[in-house]
Every structure is written in structure tokens, then in C-alpha cells.
Image 1 (spheres, helix red, strand yellow):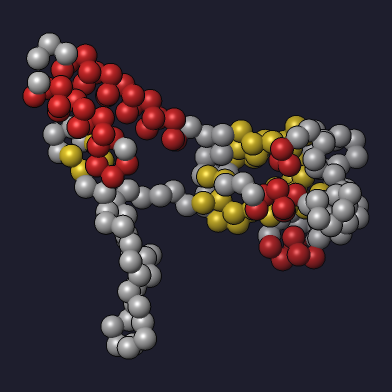
Image 2 (tube, rainbow, N blue to C red):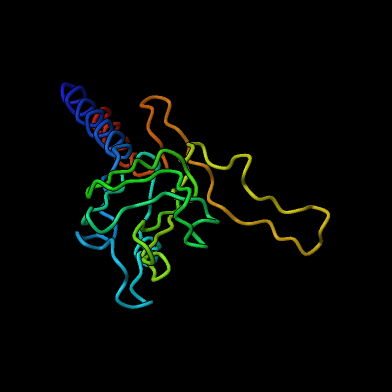
Length: 187
């Protein structure tokens, strides 16, 4: 019985560390390396290819490192992104080390402020994921129409159950730790 308190303390500290780590913002270097903010050397090597292979979350920071004497970063609308219009940016950065917080979910559009660089491919669009709400499902979940005979109801995993005694989710791996703790308590 004397082992229960230390084990529960360890489980709590581990749970608190994992929960806190999931919310820490990341600082992400655009393109993955210094000097990536430039006209791409080939159409297959654009920053959009890099962005498509990364996940961006609300609270993350993007960092550009570039020569401020010859380039800048403009945050623009989709229309200005598509047309490479540098006349009315939403935000303009020309400090050489630009740090932008991704403070909301949805698409972001950035282009080079150097004349002609955007048209040559020096631009990036990325999508910031919305914050995931716990509990699963939700108002935005698609539903099959019962009136349609060909509609198929998607099969999904059940929502994770909560262990009321410890406040841990059964479906996310904490169940095993909880089971071990309960097993030790019963021994």
C-alpha cells in the first residue's frame, strides 16, 4: 500500500509533462534551413512543397532568415499572393530575421517583397490547423443522410472513455499506466 502514493505522483507528473509539452509553441525556420527564402532553383523545389510536408499549429512561430538589403517578407491576401501584388501587404517585414506568430487557424500567404521574386516562385502558402477539441465528434463532423439509400455511415472509433478516479483518458495509452497503478494498489 505504501507504493501507491509515489507511483500516483509519478503518473501525475508524467501526465502533466506530456500535457504541457503538447501545447508548447514551436519556432519553425521557413524552408528548414537558413537561406531558404529565395527564388527556388527549380519548380520542384519550392517552399510550398516544404510547407505541405509540415504541420503548423496555432501558437507556432515562423522564422525567415534572409539578407534585408535585397529581400523582405510580405504577408498578403490570397488574391495578392496569386497575382504577386506587393502594393498593399497585410504586414511587411524587412529586418532580415522575421518572426511571425501563427495566431489563428486557416491559410497564410507570404510573398517576397523583392521586385520580380514572387513571380519567380519566392512565395509560400501554408495552412495552420485548428485547435483540436477534446471529446471527439462535434458540430463540424460530417453526417450521412438517412434519406439517401446509398449513403454509408462512416465507421469510427468510439470516443475515448474517461477514468473518473484518475482523470485519465482510457483510449490514449494512459489506460495501461492506470491499470498498473490499480494493480499495484490491489496487490
